[in-house]
Length: 342
Image (cartoon, rainbow, N blue to C red; front, side, top):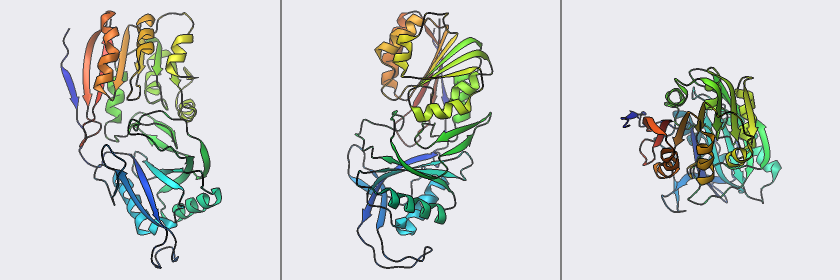
């Protein structure tokens, strides 16, 4: 059975609600008096690595970031970094759906002094009122293979202000904590949820790689029981806050949960949204054995998607619908959603 590929376009600019920035500090900058009334201290440069390298590229704004992200970036630079501690290596900014408030989380080296970090956080919150809170984590210097959506368990070093913000979609509001995964395209979240969860109902659904419950919360309206499986403790903590009583949070890696899942009736639906590496052989083999009537696979890499669905197609599944979401305009990345049935 052939299925026409349906396209879902995003506005090309200012679509990201989250950005990760490399931080470089300079020993001293010339004495100056600004909004803070301070003089001297550490200067700061914010930027990204050039593609395929660790060559630092300083920027003042990014055209695919939301306006709020760019304003806060500019504010930090105009304020000279507010005497940013030298141990800060990266920062992430995550904005709410209204693009009015954001969280900062910073990744720091071992030499960082907690008192200096917290003083810096208080300075940020005092000078940039859009910032709801700052959370510090141990450094996560990543190789080029680690992408935005790769799950990592982060070690907290300290926190100031709010640790989470509320992200409102068309149907509901989600708690999203510092370090938790959430979709980055602020324009297509509702459309993505609708495609993945729409027209599905039944007794039992599995939501694998469930994150903070974006899909589980929507599935809860049409299924009696949902099991949401998430390995990250941070995301799972948000998941529990975001879903109704008929959704059970399972803190486990997807492969471990499927391996140990006791024999029971096949679920009516399985939703999976794995990281860029895909689900892998063990998970796809378990999906074949589960024999769910429907599988909905959300993928950020067409190559791993093709690899993972081959065993499902061989087992008798067919593609009911195929969707391409341009979640990352101005890049080569594309999100695929396949609705499979047997």
